[in-house]
Amino acid sequence: MSRPVRVIVVNTDEGAARELRAHLLSVEGVKIVAEIDEPALLRQAVAQFPAEVLLMHLDPDPKGMMPVLAPVISEHKDRLAAIAMTEDRDAELVMQAMRAGMREFLWKPFPSEQLNEILRRIAREAPSGGNHAGRLVPIVGACGGVGTTTIATNVAVELGQLEHFDGNRRPKVAVVDLDFRFGQVAMFLDAQPTYTIAELCDTSEHVEGQMIERVMVKHRSGIHVLAQPSDMDQADRISAGQTAGVLAALLEHYDFVVVDGPVRFDPTARAVFDMTDIYIVVLQLLVPAVRNADRLIQELGRGGYNLDQIRLVCNRFGRDTGFLDPADVEATLHRKLDWTLPDDWRTASAAINIGAPLLDYAPKSKLRLAFQEIAEGIGRRFASEVDEAEDESKNAEKKGLLSLFGS
Image (tube, rainbow, N blue to C red; front, side):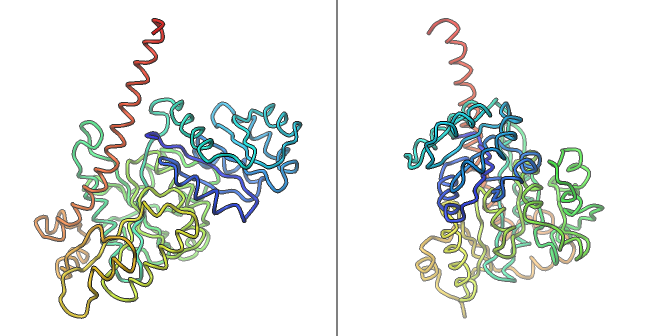
């Protein structure tokens, strides 16, 4: 599936949430932009979150849920493909759903491939260019002080320098500070924000492009910066749903949205992980960091998230004394270290103090080249998907032309 499919999930059965999430996120290209456990909130979610699919788990009370959901399905049937699943085989329930404009009605249990094929078909039928395939890249620290802000800011800058990402242009990149209380993304890049993420969160509707352009700080490297709230009171008022709405809107405007955080595993983190394309987990060769990385990976697995999307970055690599053996760390975590960053605290701290990325401060340093390698690795993975989408679009056009001649 080369085009992304964004899904709003309606599910009141907490026991089914993990399995449903795990199934959806195992399908390449699928993102959950919202999980609604109260059907009455669906209308607001549809207004706030751009999506192609409404997936509705009707059990345990399908007859109670359908009257609430049906008007929203009917209002948006031309824009959203509604899919329902239930154990209830009542014919009147099916008729009510179809009259409202339900695209598919699945009776449980059903083969997992059946839902997968529906999602693939929706992706194929989506208009070319109709939904922007922005990629969400959270930089998550296994513990405090491992360098997530340095990595997030520098990787974002390096992503913005990639040549020929989509045709002959560089990718459009945003970096977002999700440490609402003590975030330093703007400071690390010497950005002077007039507005912050708090202003984007102050709306229950979908965040429009003009508002995004006004709020984002344009950095001299070409990337855009979304700073943390300017005071603690604003930070306390931002909800997980608001954060998810902002990120979903940013993904419509940027090729990459690099996120510094989340800093704790809470509802905001779960909302971020629902939309994530690649998790970058940062650790050092120290027992607390490795132990926390293991806990984080296990928690993601229990939550139904796709562990194949995890990439490990080992920061401050290269000291000879007092550090764990990398092979032992990989054995403990049951996965390899994907990237290592050399220990160059002097260069990194000097760049931080003047608010400059290493691209500007020390472009030939080993640390800067390591950030460049991470960005190139991320870019290669998703650039291939852009090419696949273009090929698929061309093939669809050819088939359409051939069909005119009866071939």
